Image (cartoon, rainbow, N blue to C red):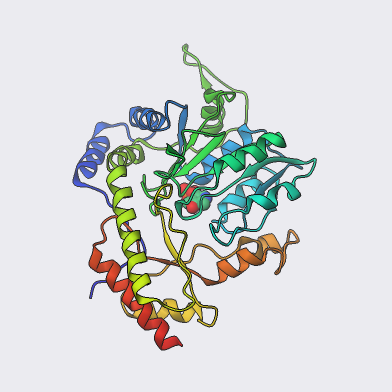
Amino acid sequence: MTFLPFTRPTIDEETIAAVGDVLRSGWITSGPKVKEFEAKLSEYCGGRPVRAFNSGTATMEVALRLAGIGPGDEVITTPLTWVASAGVILAVGGRPVLVDIDPVTRNIDLDLIEAAVTKKTKAILPVDLAGLPVDRDKLYAIATRHKLRVIEDAAQAFGSHWQGKRIGMLGDFVSFSFHANKNITTGEGGALVLPADIDPALAERLRFQGVTRHPDGGMDVDVLGGKFNLTDIAATIGLGQLKQLEAFTRRRCELALRYFENFDKLAITDLLLPLRDFRNSNWHMYQVLLPTAVDRGAFIAAMKARGIGIGVHYPALHLFSLFRHQGFKEGDFPQAERVGGQTVTLPLFPAMVEADVDRVSCTVADVLKSAA
Ligand SMILES: *Cc1c(COP(=O)(O)O)cnc(C)c1O
């Protein structure tokens, strides 16, 4: 039986051929393909300015700098996310202020945000875990009330919607990732949707060593920039992926629906399924919470022995040494700790077939039965 990983990118032959053309063209780093990719992303986001970066992490770091976040500033985010969400706040000298999650959505609990706002709070950095969007109406009402900027970590939400509008069309800063595991990929990469008050040229300088080139061949550097530019090789993969986005998202929804149907039939006691959202989510991941009595490590090993890859997204980040050293401790965010301790990500990617979903569902049931 072939091994089924928890995710795998789908790259079509047309894209592979287009990458070959770029490699033969003599121009492989940032150039015309990046501009074309940015134009297509901007079109996707309703005409808002978009700039591409070489990772979602770099994208968010630049967004924080553009938002004016620096030493002493507090940024509110969730403990149940990839470490980069809080890491970038530290990287610009800010202080991550964590707020527990809502156990239903597994996203930041919006009702707990206002109690965490202080005089030093500058921004909220919400995360759309598994592609399920945070309630944008409620989020922006809070941000407006407290005059906070929002940096949407929409790394997992490319293709998701809020009230019929694509994520990226609305809001303040919106950051996407095109890491190999995301719904569309450039290998590594990211993109930032910019609000109207931010100069895209500054985003470009922060992305590339702060450089402004003059027509006479000279240049100036007026700000400390990074080395965060996307290559034309990567942008070409992204252009090919964008064409498939709708088909990818549709397929993910179909497969997620089949998981629900299977698990409803199997009726496994204490297995907690994700929120059934077929209006907004792009089904970036299908995550279930294991019964408390089940040892996750043993479950993952048993699934692997039966040829199925299982992911963990994510252990609550405040329990990592880096954050414990900042004063966070066990018990600070009980919901995030509980979900982070029991969550497993089942295989879900567009190239899967129904039989794969059925095999995973039955194997989960078998493994849990033998663990009981
Ligand atoms: C993937 C991801 C990132 C980081 O993106 P990279 O492209 O890997 O740097 C940040 N936040 C979340 C929630 C992610 O899933």
